[in-house]
Length: 318
View (cartoon, one colour):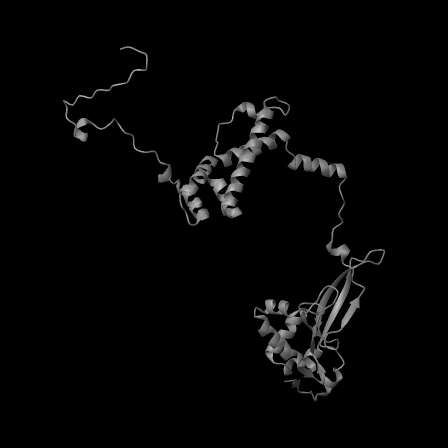
């Protein structure tokens, strides 16, 4: 239902009818010699907002929604937010925001609509104030670049490179030692580091075996990680096990898992590694036997004589 605001009868209001209640002013900031500038838009309130009777005639919720709409003016002076933006800004569902702005679009003042709703080609529903309500004016005179922005000078390239190397640069040996310590931490191998490790040069012949050891450890971690993923664990769960438990414990529980009869292998495996489950009964050794059963156990007479006769081969004599 269209809502029509009452017309004003005051002569002063008739005089101010042609003055827009709002003005969107686009200033040209930081203008250079080539004429390039940085636009910045501002919304100005005019006295006709009060004297025309528009402010008094509109309901409070209509004024609130109109002001909310005008806060979305872009630096170029465009004010056309879509309904999702308006709903988020107002803190209400999209359906409720749509109902409110449809009501605002139905309001007429002195025969003119305040706001119009449109639908873009991409399907977004937008609302825009009409030009008589908030016209756009460009102001080319302001140039505040000298007032608010200091003059900046770029440092020479070599100065930037030297500063970056001094601040963030690390030697190759230091990076490799850090990687090695991280691999040892994941594997659960915490060996004391000797002072000679810190002074080892990059060309030392003892450094290459350590590199091979690090590569082997990394490949082992990757292998165990792949096995965990094949058992149904998520990537985050596999990383948690690798971070908190050593590879030996994880491999042991992986080898024992087929003998568990678990309905949920992934969940059972995580619990087994975490709580260090014992070997499954199927793999436990049988209890040892001390000796053969005694004669009493077999109820055999003690005076029973047992003779073993072995036949001779043909052609042999006793």
